[in-house]
Image (cartoon, rainbow, N blue to C red; front, side):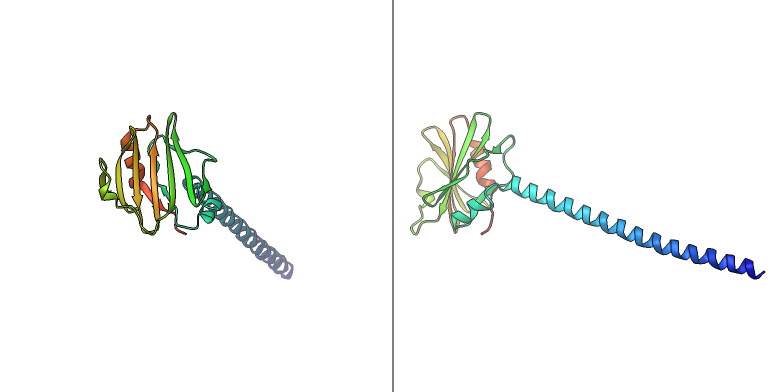
Length: 177
């Protein structure tokens, strides 16, 4: 009978040892799974932010004032890769949809900002970014936005519908500083 109890005790000890080993392995697998999910989320979020805001980073730092970017972009429009640049304190970038292009210029609001209500042939409206005037110059659609910090000009090509410039003006969102 004593031998049977020794065998039973030995089997029980092995089971406990295996259970501890299984618990450790399960814990390590669960931790690895959590880390993999977290890294995937971080990578996807970074990629989405970079895609949604191509001005973030060097352009935003070089500007020295809060920049705006349309979020969401009008249907079919994308940021023209490599178009963003800073020249004499003005940020330039282009959105495109085939032959339809829209150039956006942003600069720090001047000390004596323009009075948008005095622009002949322009319609005034309030957008998320600030006071906005929408109209056309030489047959091309234009929107001018005056925020507290930034003067934004949106210039459409002759192929750009005027409502597209209005949609872009309404969706301009601050990237912060």
